[in-house]
Length: 424
Image (cartoon, rainbow, N blue to C red; front, side):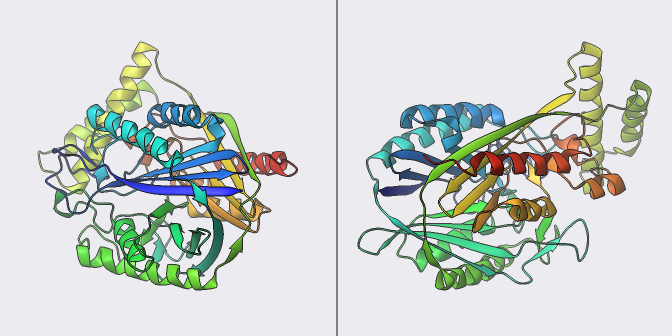
């Protein structure tokens, strides 16, 4: 038997706290409520729980203990739990990002407790379901923000769960795009276009919970984005276009076999790139100081982030606390003919597309921003030609190695092989 239940939680802060996704400072109100969604599946007596949270990133220091607690509530393993960020750039901070906000621990703890209460609630609301799955293309909605004319993933996938009466009880929609249509807009909290997308799909589906999952969107933006273009109208237009593709996906949908449930995780420790010399770090600080003149232009923010990174790096070197390794985890969840491959970072779209190719399943979804945050997962080509464009200075001290792309594919292949003959 397959049973399921899904709910949404309002996790909007009740006071001004740091926005995360840009140099915005404290929030100045609420444009649209921030939400967390919980999808609970029971497949032949085995549980799988997936949580999404409206924020830019979720650190493993927050997701790991929460996953363990959820697993304990369900008497299952950690690999049967998954926690993803929707990657909105207008949410509350859950991890510190240089010049991009710091978390309010009271808020993050409260969200964690709410999610645990939600999981308890869902156990009493499980009902028999069957699944339908379909995909369609959202042509022209996204662009490659690193390489003009470069690859994008325009696929919109929809999983709808129906009860024994044929009524939908929950929907999952997957799309690959940076939620930046409201980047810095009025300094107010918002899920960005995923929120308007969820609302639009709820309106045509009887008000059921709509669970949004973002893909390998590290280098994918909505078409037409610039910091000056952000507006509610722009956000709703992107949502409308994705919704149109989602509705076509629903029309294209076919019954989906959701059994068996098989889960696995692969971990590998990566040796990070070495730091620059101490002399170079001091020169970076001096150069940053020469560019900081008290204004808050994008260029000044960039130099402020660079200076903060350099000072943090220098302190870590001087105290002997500089970590030169990073643990990378990839999770695979097989729900019958549907496979989910989850990464704890900001993966480039090329990596997501290749992981889909590696997967032998009829349907594969890439879940970025999941189970922690290790940074941008770039292609080797991009790193060799451009470095990481100093993006790592926002959330880490050392850059990921150029071999990261190859390591991700190798880990994916191992996961596929491990799960090839497994059943529950």
